[in-house]
Image (cartoon, rainbow, N blue to C red; front, side, top):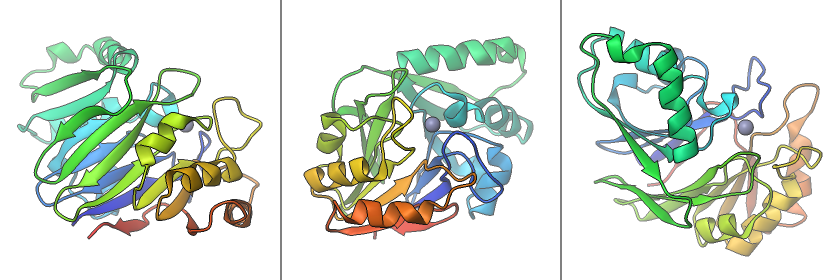
Length: 253
Ligand SMILES: [Zn+2]
């Protein structure tokens, strides 16, 4: 328990070994999914997670490589008889579109659907997202092409913490969000795409935030060797640097 499982690590174009970026924080009583792609009913059990134990889902922004799995997750949970409520958190921009998307599927007429609570977050720094016996979670707006949030997760029982930049250009909001965290998971899409960061920019944020270690994620995987990003980041950040890989577990005990 008190761990983060990387469920996908790729940028917007996945490969066989690298699914689109999403991850799950696992506590004793709660499991929190951060973004939702592919088909979670397949992916979560592959990572050793019972997908009906999901209690909370945070959606960072409304791009297909971060939210395309939501309709299948909701439909499959319903078809498998879920009764427990599911909390979904995100900005107004994101959740309005998720509700519209589900509306296109006519989900209000799906009989005996389990309760889904939408929690709309303001675009303010260090917004409290949720607090339970396992996690305390905060969100801050970051710099991407559409309204987007980065996330800080504090593991209540072990007093460890992590931050996830989401898709962003380097910005002071992520430095504050990640300040003093044990782990920063930062995107490294590359400098040619607007709204994104390079590995060395991610390392600069990690250094400013004085985090314990840096995991690069959301990196290119097609016709590209992401290992080359490690020395690039190590030139800037003095702590440990690694690539987040699919099904990697990061311990927060
Ligand atoms: Zn993305």
